[in-house]
Length: 145
Ligand code: SF4
Ligand code: SF4
Image (cartoon, rainbow, N blue to C red):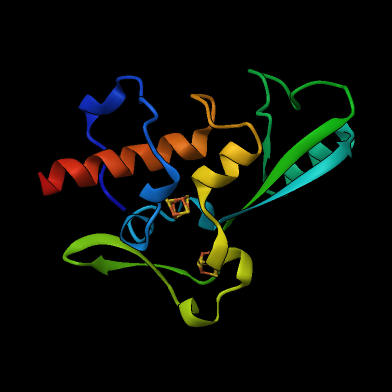
């Protein structure tokens, strides 16, 4: 992981292209190695249960609320980092290592966050994953001059 500096609170400008997503970037990012389940038609009772057992549910709860709303709707449950993701040094810089890299699933092999976002019409400044990737990309470029 590349450390984020305080000065980088300015809005992140998305410039990433499909061809920017390469292993040398991914080893310092690993944003897609957090496992999320996208669930349909989840009622508030179930969302509150997921939150109560320590899972992160998106959308977030409002301030002083037990849940985002009382409606039944789709939500995302964040399970956390993949069990195969390890932190380590990559090329002298803190990064990530997949301990089953050669046997990782086809989805892991083929996933390209920019291509996915373009295909799902989510390449925009609200895409938290792409904003994280862009920060890592920009920091690596700054470090390498
Ligand atoms: S989110 Fe994109 S850049 Fe980051 S590890 Fe996944 S594919 Fe690579
Ligand atoms: S198997 Fe490896 S590449 Fe796939 S999510 Fe886990 S750490 Fe990431």
